[in-house]
Amino acid sequence: MRSKVVAGNWKLNGSLAGNESLLKALLREIPRDNPVACVVCVPSPYLAQVRALLEGAGIAWGAQDVSRFDHGAYTGEVSAPMLVEFGCRYVLVGHSERRTIFGESDAIAAQKYVAARKAGLTPIFCVGETLEERDRGETQAVLARQVDALLQAYGAVGLERGVIAYEPVWAIGTGKTASAAQANEAHAFIRARIGAKDAQVAARLPIVYGGSVKAANAAEIFAMPDVDGGLVGGASLVAEEFVAIWRAALGR
Ligand code: PGA
Image: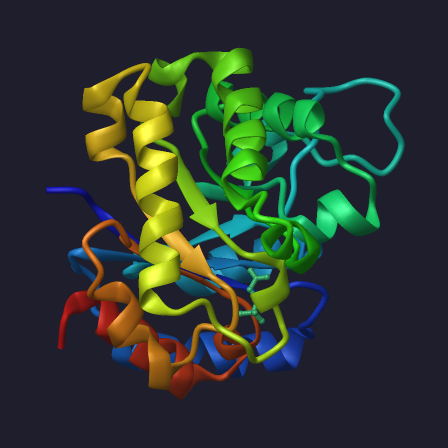
């Protein structure tokens, strides 16, 4: 059985007061031992606050990006060993907003994945096509290119203890969701691509869906055989929504 993950991506949102009330509301609902990992990926300056509130509870935390370098003259970067010092277990890597707004290439995303794994973090590696790419029939070619960059950098065994997030760019923050069938098709393609290199790693790899996941659509998407949870942006900022999405992954 593959493990399931529901991760919230707060993006550039939060404040000390707002984070505290959101996390306290989540803590009231998410039990300490649960079969579906519940994760919040927060802006790095809040990691100390989040650790203080979540330590010992059933919610893990992580960052939204990581440097490919461990230390040195790289102004503005935050390294994987630093994230580990703040109790992070997860980190998003190669989110489409990093790729499109900040010009992050496939190769840089793959290097960040390697840096995160070497420090013992679980990277959530984001892939997905734009609307133009889908309309041109290039979805699988784009996913193959993004996944292959990772396989080349680290090999299939390097994907052990990682998570892939399939996030069609056209579904992020738009209110448009991929249909359950579209999501499953992309997930199955990604799994087969990795499976061609290592069937066991592919069979165990959690592949989560992201892109306008809400309480109202989560159960249908999460019921698909190749969908192992979700990466949730906007809806992760509302405690009741995020808890309901996490419950949908539990299957109740
Ligand atoms: P969304 O964002 O749920 O707001 O569409 C998902 C993401 O960008 O990870």
